[in-house]
Amino acid sequence: QTTQARSSYLNTEILWGHRFDPVTTYNKERQAYEVDYKRFNETTQDGFRTPEQTTFSLRQMSLNPSEPTPVS
Image (cartoon, rainbow, N blue to C red):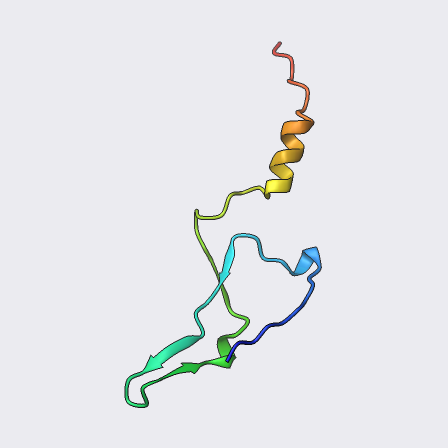
């Protein structure tokens, strides 16, 4: 069964550098997948896999580079 959901998020609700934890396991005895809905909103930091900046931020920085600081 395919399920689709539509949602929007505020920027304060987004956890940058996090991934959702797995919620499905395979039950060999029942020969079926099970979903643990208690873990549905759980996240874990993904370590070094996510860049520190968003693509939008990187593009903005490349279009508007800051002036170099003079060396004294």
